[in-house]
Length: 220
Length: 193
Image 1: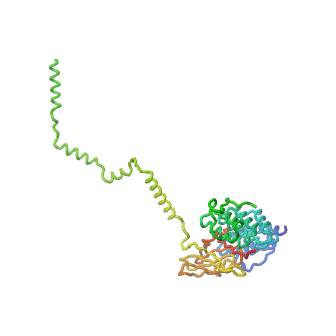
Image 2: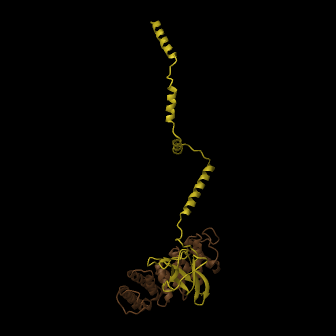
Image 3: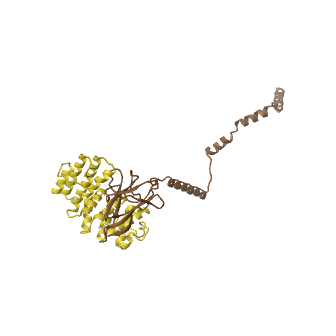
């Protein structure tokens, strides 16, 4: 609770204790540096990973974004990180929180993240949540993408299975399959034909092949 | 009375039976008028195209014409579809080439024949264009670099000639675009659980 309060203070622009980030030294104007330093301190105090915040500042500087735009982007990221931490809990790794923030930004709900975490147990969430964001970016509806991730988790899928699924779906979409159907069929193949099929031949077109399935996978 | 009427009728009949004397130039005048009224070759051609007329075509010929028209439309549509940015050819840019304990060695490729320099920037090198330059290979135009990356998602982009930002044409875009220059995403797989 105290951590979230500190983060809220930082997002509101209230100065807290400021620490130095060597990679940003001498590269920002004083006002921007002060804002970023405040956000970094507050994120640290709230138990959030600070590396993606520094990374976002560096990206903005390299892309020659205005200071206001950099600060706005960092504030949004800190908010997403805070929401992901609140959903995944204090024991979640930094990588999981970062991937969770990205998934939230992609449109996933906190309930979806909690469901995936519940099914995955102690296994890391970084790769499954990254694949969730990737599927959404490729045009898979977020509900379908979340169901697919949960479906694989229930089958004990490994990180390699998730990346294999992502490559298979990308190949199917490239071959003309509808994104939602491609993701659903690939996920079904995992549990029906074994994991070897994950990166194998393109999934059959819905309603035409032996693995024909509905457009959305059955919810657990 | 009767005789007078018969005589009158005979006179009228004689007048009508008499041959009509025509002006010798009459034929010439008529032909000249006909020639003036006749439309020229271009006018006839225009009339052929513009005047409605019934057209009789068998169903088979009609279907063949429709198919040919559809083919022309499809080919024309494909010809005007947008292509990749100049100098950029979509190829599988980020591909796993080796696995190590620390992660995977990923090969990044960009086809940019017009470029003088290409650099890779991302969350793995602090977005510093000076740290990961690509080398041109295969006779020019194909730029590549191999880079070890730790497992997990990574955002990246190419910087062409030090100023032009290009996302990977073969990879999905990041869901966030905070600075008006989109990034691409690669997910480096971890070991099996």
